[in-house]
Image (tube, rainbow over all chains, first blue to last red; front, side, top):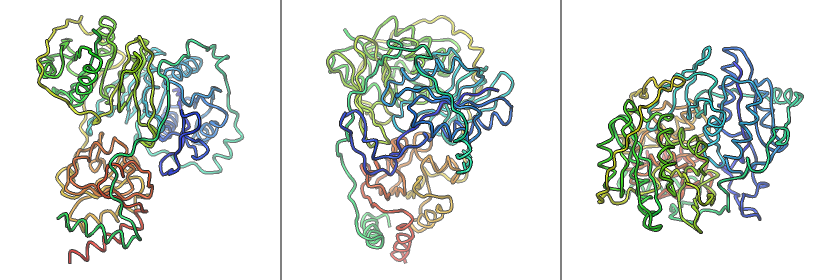
Length: 259
Length: 324
């Protein structure tokens, strides 16, 4: 089974209290935040590695981004990917449609039985890319997948619906699945593993090599500006040492009749 | 007259609440734009849904597709694409649900229509549709404009829009579609309910909910001790289930349970909307998180900016003292 795992790099904004809008007004100050692999994509890579280990075949990690994005490809190699491809183009604020056009073109040049995406990204959270790519490639898809059982030519998958309900499908391969978190437990990667992956060769391609330009990539949805959300109702903050704050909260709970 | 088309959603013989929320948004936009509000519902027997929708919309397209009892993405996409091509609405609205995430991106590509997903606001400016999305974990708002002159497809965030008024008498239009074709490459096998364990968090008066900020499986016992002191039970956000630290029956949120306890004490939960839609029925919401910018502080009644591991043992002790 040949598998392609599409992954992306995102700013780590959980716990980041220094979020500011940059001078362009269309992005955050990137120098204030660290970067990491998209949470969903760790599950994508683990799913890909497990399927390959079970059925044989290959796993290729694919991304679109500048050279800085190679750290997530190294991570993919360390997790067990056989090859890594980067389309050299900065698409950070691009319309998902544009990125889908690039990825479907890159995927179309590879051999595959299964294409895996994260169900969404941590940064923009559009949840569009994978399903768009499936439509562009003309292959069946399922979004928000929490279980994959693959066997020759077919996959049985479970999709997550709302309120703890799942639905199951039997799908003919090749197919595209977008993976939900919790589908597996992504393996731990050692520093040694990353170091060994540093010596591996990455394939780099460009829009020109993919025969893409201009009109095919024009955005139909444009990011105009970003702003910090207006201050709404805020919690009454209880300050002081842990002892003082715990004391204060206990009194509030008593007064409200919870205690 | 311009048209706003709302795609209603149903599953297992029930119209989804989100459909009325999206119609509430549609009512506001239709009034501002002077547009006609049309709801469309596609399925095997949809006449009951059509009657409900007619109280919210000016017109309902009741699309009977024999054999399509459950909302399968591929046939729904083909049928909706045909209707949208024919009617050419200015805007198509759906809820940002699992159904829409499986369908809307493919529909947008098929139609060549601009798509904006999980929007928290929609407006018409300079003849084009503008949307606001909440990005970077709720810490930033991003404003987008969608290409004018095309049918814009927008999915709205669940729980963000109120259902509006159901006092209209919209006209119901029966729409015939050809027999739904077979999709041999993708066969629906059925629904699976998540297994119910021994815990029912929806019945508890006090919930001590843990999030990623609890740090480790071992630390969950701190929350359990605190819950025991408060006479409550432990709940959690999605990452805790994803890590395998607690079983899924403890999960609050969109893909978990919806709760409304007297007290919801959130420990190390950032406040992603997927979680918050599940706990906003709480009478009192208290958040403890070491990130002062965590979105949960905008929703909580009381907040403490502190590492949960430092304060929770102290809090459990204080409460034990008070009770004795």
